[in-house]
Every structure is written in structure tokens, then in C-alpha cells.
Length: 382
Image 1: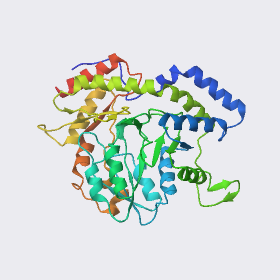
Image 2: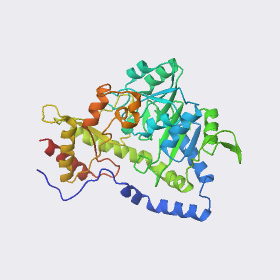
Image 3: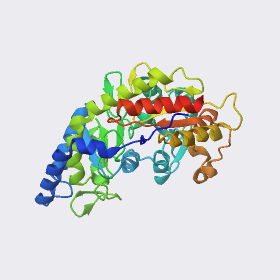
Image 4: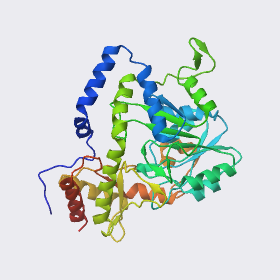
């Protein structure tokens, strides 16, 4: 067994901060001195830059990725009696916002190789009550948006892209978040473009939707103290906007570093027995928010999740930290028991939850650390 005196974290946001510390410190002090902490020119400037980066006409900054999804559904007037199709293999926010507006989440299974929503099952799940589809570009891997938009257009459905883990990813020549009717982003600190706290943004090319989003996120007011509908308080702080402007300039470089790490992992892990390595789909360019393998239990004693967790513990003993995204599918969670899904109904996602393991992945992950991850994993599986 290979022992290491060094530890490899699953992610390390402190290293990234250290590379831009001087820029960030100056920007933060400037905001503090200005007295403009909510809204203002810094937030507007960031919105313009983020929209330009994605090739869209409108960006609306908000408080979080969850709020971005919630506001998108509100802007499309989706509510009680409506159905929204999405994946059960994602963070709960994707589904909870559907419930929060009074609509019903319809879960369909995922693809075996990408972890993304199975488009054949999307088409089969459409009913007269279906109003929208929320594809999740999971782990930075884009969904086949050409096929998805064709399905949506043929049934007159809205597409809300959940881009929380995929800022900078592309499908064809277009950035994710610019292809559907609305794109929703998270700036949680561990995302590819992460702030120093919560934050989010919504992108669209529809001027009417953009105008409605701006009203909804400001308590439902277009003019001060004149309320047109029930809204929420969902604003991006000027401090976060200042930091995100700096980080946006570095995003492509950081994403390229993630791709290089993924390629290196792929080179050494794709043929290792017991591992199913993630596959990048032709036509898309992943930004590898996570590098998630599957630990197969085939031919071994015990259930797959028990074996995966055993490997994870052994990696920790060798100084390698990992994460499990996600251990339990949403359709079988207690909060969605009332929907009536049964174990075995969505078999691909249920199996994935037992097998997935996310290896260390962040732009500053050094090659010796990558080697340590690879050798430790091979040692555990041997």
C-alpha cells in the first residue's frame, strides 16, 4: 500500500484566491470606500460582462443559483397544475424550485455515460401539463442542446438551462446558458466561477423575460414603492460583483487547467479495471467542475455503494479526499415520496448513486497531486 505524507483536498479555493489576492483586495476596499453596497454600477458592469461572455443580450444578477431557477420559473408563469421535467441526479435546488412555485417535478432517468438527463425519456414524459424542461449540465458536462431544443420546440416547451456547474462550457459554438430560453448560474465558492459567498445570475435573449425578472427580483416593483406583483428580494452584492468581474477575466484559463487535469486523469484511469471513467460527448466541451468516476462492484462481494465507500475510505487513508455527488436520487427522497416513485423505476440514476466518486478537481491541482490520486486509486483497487 502506498502511503503519502501529503494530503490532496477534494477542492481548494484558497489557492485560487492567493493568485488574485492583490486584485481582489484592491477591488473590495474600493467598494467599501464607495458606500455603494447594493446594486449600482459595479453590478451593472458585471451583468454586461457576463452577458457578453455568453453571447446573450441580457444578464440579471441575483442572490444565488437557486433564486435564479426560481425566478426563471416565475418569469415563465409556471405554477400550480403545471409539470416540469428534470433529472433526479442533481442538487436538490433544481427540483425544489419547481415545487416552490407550485408545479410538479417530473423525474426521468439519466444517461449511463454522461450522468446527464436521458433525452429519449424526456420526450416520453411530456404530457399536456408539461410547461418546461430543466436540463442540468452536470459536473460541467453540457447536455446535447441540439436534440433537446428540437424536442422542446416540437412541443412548444420552455427550456431553462441549469448551468450552476458549467459556466464556460459549450455545446457546438454556443456557451451553455445561451441556447435555451433562460440560463441559470450559481456563483457558490466551489463553482468554476465562484464568488466569496452566495450569488447567481440569469441569462436570456428575451427582452420581455429579462424585464420581468428584474421586477420579480426587486420585490415585484418596477418603480420604487409601486408593486406590480409579489416578488422577492434577490440581489447580488456589489462586493461579489467586484470579485466576480476579476474572476471572469481568468475563467477561461482556469477552465483550461481543469481540462488538462481531466485529460491527465483520463490517460491513466480510463483502462483501470473497476473504474468507469467519465466520457466527454462529441459536440460538447466540458469545464469539469467535477471529475466523477464510477466504482464498479461487479465481481466483488457486497453492494456497490458499500464497495464505493470502502474505496473512498482507503483513499482517505492514503491522503486523498473525495466527494460523493450524489448519494441519494431525488425521486426517492422523503420530500418527494408523495410523487409515488418506487425503487428500480429509474435504474440508471439509482445505480450511479451507489457508484459515483468525485476525485480532487480544481485548477491549481499540481501534477504530483494528480499522480498521488492516480496511484492511490490504483493501489486501492488492486
